[in-house]
Image (cartoon, one colour):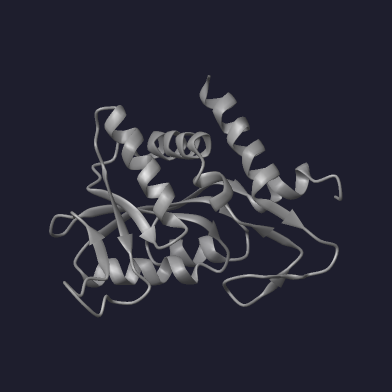
Length: 190
């Protein structure tokens, strides 16, 4: 399949398995806001086909960067980072995945960032959905506090609610595979 066909297939999966809408704002978002639209990417990112399509799409956007790791805040970023890592190895340009815990581990090594990152690593942060950017900015701050550089943030979906602008204001380029407008425009309710 071509990149365009893969992009269309991934959108179809996200639209049918991840996207929900309601006439009333009944969905509570991580930001605390309520919305008429909700997207839970895990029913796609945790499938074999979805993971492959996500991994291929994001790897295409970072394959020419000098990247030491790809990852983000657990849980939404975990399957995305793993998918990108696996595809990168298949493409013979391995990029290891990492996971950022919401809280520092209180036992064992006490790590907040899991993975095999080198010191002062150059990283790509991945997200499933960006709304206000709060969890992404928290991830960036945790990684920077450990001495890492963030090359780019890539989200599957930008809800277009200010998160992208906040990330860019922190000096980090932002890109999304899709925006909420893509989903609204595909909806028969619109």
